[in-house]
Image 1 (cartoon, one colour):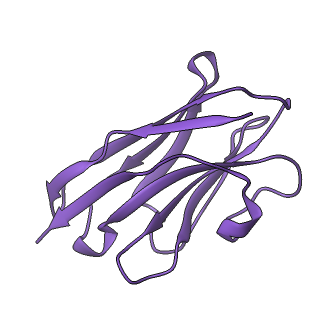
Image 2 (spheres, helix red, strand yellow):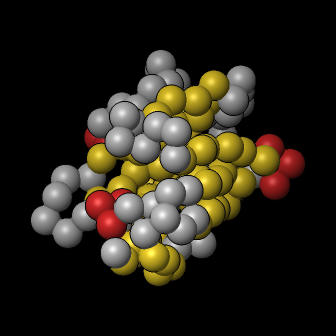
Length: 125
């Protein structure tokens, strides 16, 4: 059973930076599509970025391209999301998720079977 634990959320002013971490354990497959998602109050959960663990291939939602970077440390089984130039509209609960198999892209949340508990990011203007 894959377990995911996020950390690193917090409150920052617009233009600031945060780095989220997702510690993974219980891997049962060789490679995964790992992703970061976010959900703001009253809105649907949306994909932010994904990375394929086998090749480090990445993809991003248009809203975060050029500002966010997804990466992984295989030795530590940890996924990261570096968020720069943060905007108030980036305020949300951020979730780490994993999927086994299939093409790795910013897929709908329903396509991911493993989820962390989330970490809150608040950006003030």
